[in-house]
Amino acid sequence: MNRFSLDPTTRTVGDGTTVIGGSPLRLFRLTAAGRAIFDRIAAGDPVEPSTLTERLLAAGAIHPTVDPDTPHRFGISDVTVVIPTHEDEPARLYELLRHCADTAGVVFVDDGSESPITGVRGAHVVRLRHNGGPAAARNAGYRGVQTPLVAFVDSDVELHSGWLERLVAHFDDDAVGFVAPRVASGPALEGADVAVARYEERHSPLDLGPDPARIERGSRVAYVPAAVLVVRMAALREIDGFDADLRVGEDVDAVWRMTDAGWIGRYEPAVVVEHRPRRTWKELSEQRIAYGESAAALGTRHGSAVAPVRMSPWSLGVWGLAASGHMVSAAGVAGGTALALIPKLRGVPATESLRLAGTGHLAAGGSLAAAVRRTWLPVVGLGALGSRRARRLAAAAIVPAMIHGGPARLLDDFSYGVGVWKGVITRRQLSPLLPALSAWPERRPGRLTNIARRLRRRSEEVAESTGPTAATDATPPTDTDAFELTLEGESA
Image (cartoon, rainbow, N blue to C red; front, side):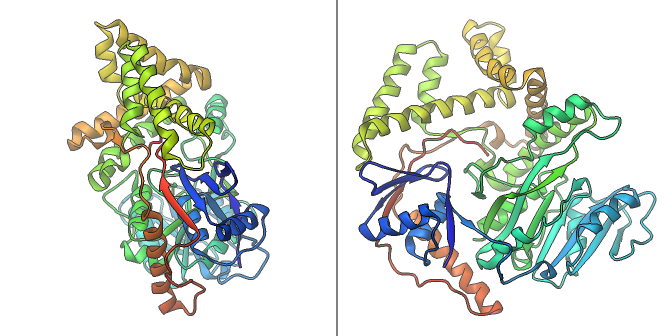
């Protein structure tokens, strides 16, 4: 039996037999049996595996709760730690090594340092003659690993006591391929600009927030960085490791290829590690440009997964009309879609349907404003030279950033946009510029069932080589009916 926690978005509406939650939002209608299971989940009680729990997990409406102090299939002795390093001081390496005691071993990969690492007591060192980047270094480190799990740790990360146990506990589920902790931004380094560290503390792109999540493109947590990433070796071998052609974005690519192969990724924010912030604004800008430039390379491999916004055509139409000055028409479309949603959401009170539609349009507006600042600013800027409406659009996008981050946020977004356009021009890849549109709401009654069955097959494949599993049989769903509500303006 397993325990689960509700996602912050998950709640019952109406008479209690309708559940809304997950990312993107989905609606579940429960039978009497399903209601009893959901009530136990909400109360924090252990429940048996069922079709309902599988579908709620697949939607990101609930998340597994793990207790690192109880027995689990794997322990930290089943983990080999791989740490790429380049021009790091020995003291830094020994500090990392200190937090990896009781693991199966630590592999430092010297990625072409001018002063080679000659040896680290208690660790194995792999020397690369030429600097190949983080993907090549991680690949060189994991190739000889014999343990079932491997933990990748960047050398500029601060680990804390007990950082590994809770992450490893998630691998009791045979379908879990990788688990990541929360990567917070650490304090300013000696001699660094304190203002940069304070900004990163609130706006670091590596910090994905305090709520657990299933990692899946198009959702609230669409990717995780490999600053600290624990991976099942079977999943890593299936995708043949990281793509060494990518200097930046190689971790996002690997995560997406593992999920494409059917593996589950879990984001576990109960474990917090710290990443060193950039020393200067110039370093921060250069980092964001590199992140933006990777979008085109990822777009070549993953298409619309790198779209700057993800929303319904209705929301795009509402804000398009508003931006062009047709406020009455925009309000009419927004109101019409809200009213049209009411009969589609059987079991949901009309007031809740209207609230969902309204918050969906507002979220889409926030995503569009971010896309203007981060991706479309050159186009809007050119339009602003001769159009008052384009100037108003630019102002509407810039003001929220000034309120929530000040000029530093504009530098952040502008730098990312420079990288995006640099990558688009260099690779002739338009995916990072084009919005991804989906129906609203989109009825896909078989999708979650198919996901659950695919994940069960994954568990069975793993069980053939690792021993018995507690996976349930593939019976048709009898406790829920579900369809997807694409109400959030989310981007990857």
